Length: 187
Image: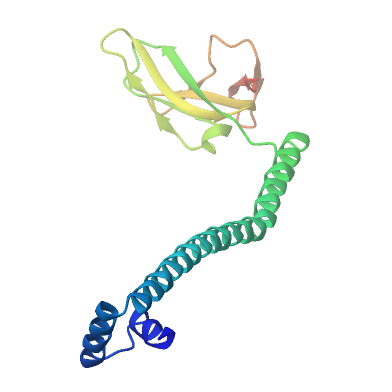
């Protein structure tokens, strides 16, 4: 009888066998009680199995996360080490970078028709200045590296003059006079 009950519970019977099984359970109280006990046991086993599977799955996911963390930890440490090394490197070793400063050149020459500036910061190439309305002033804004520079103005394509607002001047090799401009680094 236990065999028939087990086959019924495990769904190993055909329809005719199931029909005979139900008829037998209906007739025999003893067979009915044994079948119910087996069904209760099967229910208990399935519940325990489900709980074990759930616990096993949680443990499996925990292991996967732990392994992932363990495998990524050296990469994180390596990245942190590289960042630290870069910070140390840049804090101890300062790389000199020329600083560009915006410098405004302003000259009052109301009689001039055209004014250019030429100097070490322009590679001695002439750059035209712009007239400011009818005020007589001419201006030009240039980015200049920090350091000491020589320059002069060229009026109407011929007359070379130094900047009248700068005290530092020197004679050039062509009989003219250059202004000396000192541009300081901003700290």
